[in-house]
Amino acid sequence: MGIQVISRDGQPEYAVVPWEQYQALLVAAGRAPAPAPASVAPVEEDNATRLHALSELAALRQAKGVEPAALARNVGISPAYLAMIESGERQPDAAIRRALAWHLGVAGWSEPS
Image 1 (cartoon, rainbow, N blue to C red):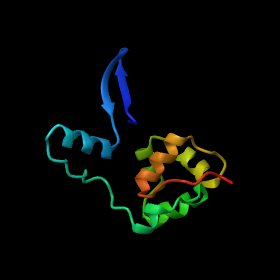
Image 2 (tube, rainbow, N blue to C red):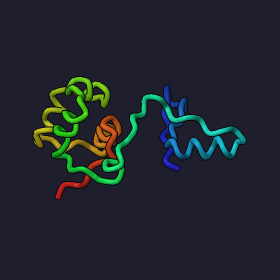
Image 3 (cartoon, rainbow, N blue to C red):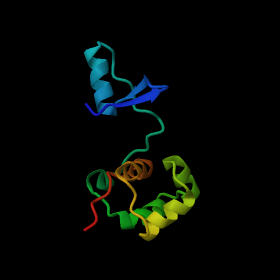
């Protein structure tokens, strides 16, 4: 399982699991699967299977009508850092790439070649 444990003052406080695994845990506990969160945007069929190049970030953001400041805030980075990523000046780590993909509703990013 891909569990992330969040601790406070050295003690585990939360456990974060992927949605599919959460659903499986509910079924195993005899509870009906929970509906998908309303904040999850539907993923288009083409974007669900295709890994985009990180150089497409600005075009994807603009096509979705997302302002740079809003995307940066949602991902937890500064607008200046987002601008550097979009221009190719900086390569974000895997966690930021995942957050960007999630907030834009795309499958992810292909590795730079």
